[in-house]
Length: 80
Image (tube, rainbow, N blue to C red; front, top):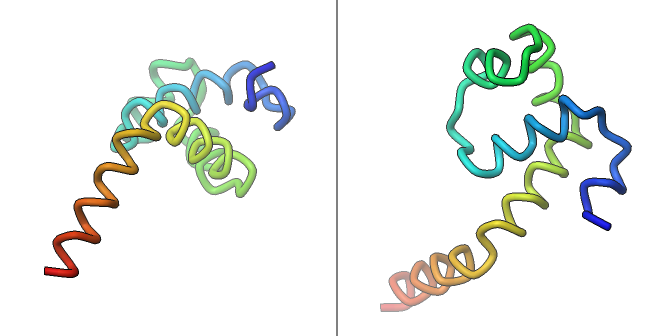
């Protein structure tokens, strides 16, 4: 079972989360167009704490190793 299934999200929200996690800088307008919802719906989803948490969890799933490497580099840089 995917962790996203534990959030009780709609199909559109899951699609949006996948896109947000893969490309966090994508605008609400572009996401809304890709998923087929209004920009205001996308904006509301991105303000929802559960949606935000699900996006973060999925981002970590996709980028966990890279994220650890970046944080390690930041710590090394700060310590030197």
